[in-house]
Length: 264
Length: 326
Image (cartoon, rainbow over all chains, first blue to last red; front, top):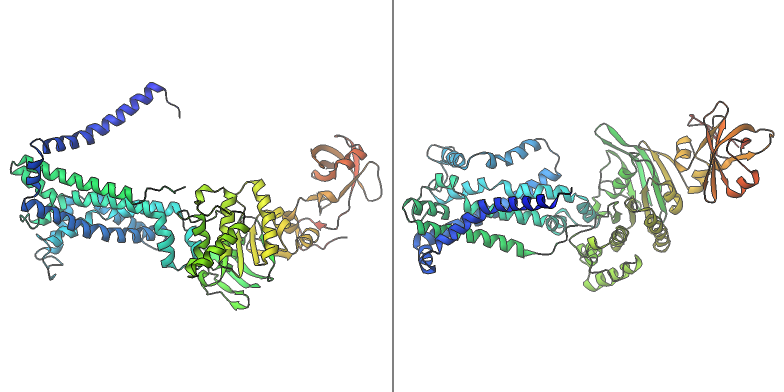
């Protein structure tokens, strides 16, 4: 399709303007407000015991949830793309549930299942108002990302390379590690980036199950809210900036893993 | 030798293979030839172990391989769309099977060098598949399949995705390669010219059955039925008899056993000339002559001529079991 020059320019301006308005300006404002009173104040604000605890809790929860969902996601994507079984459509729909249900509802459901009088009330460790609850909630809300990124890649790649590997003597396991995984690695990487972003940014579900015990079950997002409600705006901005830095760091790490493009 | 006995395969209601029995002699290059949906690819994939037959057996070199997984059949398989490992270099692609078998590094290196030389890709070691042309990718796939010294080489429409010129070059190259390597080879194709050009033997398939097996000349000269005759080359119908267009003789005067016909169209295809004739009470038939013959006869469109059939490959149309007339 050919578009005249004025149109092309105005389309670009509109697209970039939209992005700037929604994305760049708020982020810039956060960073501006964060460093308004100097780097020292920010440093002090993010190294309080509460902030350090929140930082490590967020990292811990993410470090548990993302690997689990990556393994589950790849297996599930393999089942969806390659498998022939009854109930595939249902599985496909269930995977999207965390997208469809409000995170707050997810948190409430966890309380009903694992809280006092729930089905899983008898677990040997406390779930609700404790770290396991936060982990469960985070796992649940970040389930779909890897599955949804990897399934179309698997379908696109097809299974001919795996068949070729089989005729060359490779076992299923060898074919998976040497052929399948390398050919879907961009999908996996992107799914991981999205999962990490979602895990560190999750607020609703975590907020419901956390109990907000200072220094114990406060994640970074909860810390932002807590400081905001306590009129500690500078502190809230500092914690937000820390969240943004983690997210950017993940993105950069992923793009650096293997910059070679060979998908043709 | 590969022996396929009473192999049956259904996909739902569709019968892909209907009790097929076929023997493929050791060291031969045999083609499975047929239209799409005839079951030829399914048969090849069953020989490879990539599909399981519903019933029947597959023997490779005297051993029952029916339940042996593809990994342990010692086969080489070449796919129509190359199935190149895209994230690996040419070297790693070719070395794949040898690495899986944990062969020593220097042996792998020597063998990769040797094979890339054989398939004409010497010096392409560090390229990625997307830096190769279609023909080069397929030659790499062949080197990869040959690297593990397979007992049988199975090729599924290996030249089907290539353009006509490369296809012709590669099939002649494959025939020469086979004459050097002598590995038992089965090739699936829907292109009768390709099958005729390179095969020792051809099995013609239709509707999940093998219609006839023989060497190319035998099939062309003595087709078992109208399907085989029609699939192996052009056919004209005269007096309810099927003949090859080059077995129709044209004369400018009436003789014993000739029929009157009118020249409808003359198409010059270089050395070959196709003459379309109208016979009374029949569909138009096509005759194939050489340029010299047409000049000697001084054929013109609209002229009246006399024709008779001379070939040996004559069948009654519509009767599959008709005997071969002299």
